[in-house]
Image (cartoon, rainbow, N blue to C red):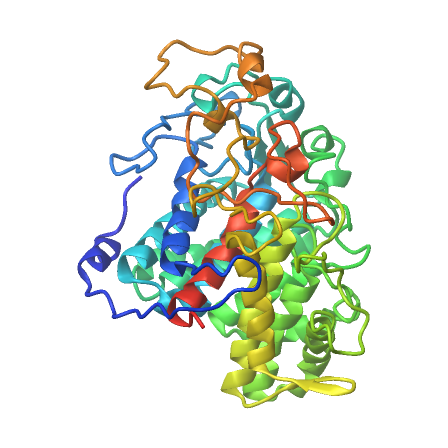
Length: 500
């Protein structure tokens, strides 16, 4: 991968003085090095890379992989990220990951040391370069046969499973994945605008094209029988593109509005909110449900520009924030005894990091416009929202009943047996001979720690009882994902600059 000369200049910028203040924590009374955690949260993405690895690859136990992706269909689909501990590239979560990395840079990039801002932009570009390939011709493409892949425990460098290419082409529908791709490219165009204007323009132009496809042929991609075997039950649109939402269409339009300032997209948000479910109060934000994030994003324009037709988005964002404040009279999101936001279903840290990020973003929007949130009997200001976010981030970093950092490589105690093929198997450097599909089973079943440290990976985390067993087989708790880390990058950047 090549990086623009402008990006490389960031390496030589002077690092701003950062003062890490001593703070007290509830459970372990430890001090957190947010800069170290930020660096590691970005480094994690290098461990998830697919394709040709560059000379400056820092996690040296990884090597080239997936070099024939797309060849069966005569298209270059090399690159992108493996979304979790497997060897499959699912475009839906990858696009959401990209959107959140870009949003992290947009909101909190100025809080990052220049060299980490450069690393964050490189992490975004690794994905956007791939996403641009997927929209290079009509349709939306998915790589990998998840069923066959999940029956193996092998390194991505050794993959001998079928790399099936699943595609959705007009007039078939792919509103959610095309809408999310539009959001990812539009948000990324904003992240790159100062550093590489030409690339930013390319991203924005392709975002508009992806959105046009999503809106013209409305429907869920996982309803298409030719694609369903490759994405379900893993990354189906469980909510449906309109079942409780149409959220990806509004999400894509909202990012295109913010990136382009084109009134066409503002009109789209205004005119389609009710039809596509924008006024539904859904207290969730993640790869499959954009409601809470959409409401926060659109609220910025209402708060700063008084676009009164967008007031319902601000009201929904306020309602969501009130569910996160224990002293409010709202129906609250579940919190574990140790203080972690919890939603059933596994990979719980995806909810923790995404909600913490939204808390910080909304707090900034409120602070800039000197506003608060009416939560019934109490008024909630930016400081309270930031305090709630900090509690979640500190929980991840070790302030929890287990006294365990859920970020691999951070702190003295962290998960040793994560559910990740490359981390759990000997590296190509240490074991040059291929490890076949079933030959890795012994390593999977081993009670020993993983030989390769996937620095910065945040695992799915403990259950509602705050208990974590560090069991490789328990993927719901021990598997890292890109969409856990992406919003964490922005949250950690905020606390680098505001540690107390």
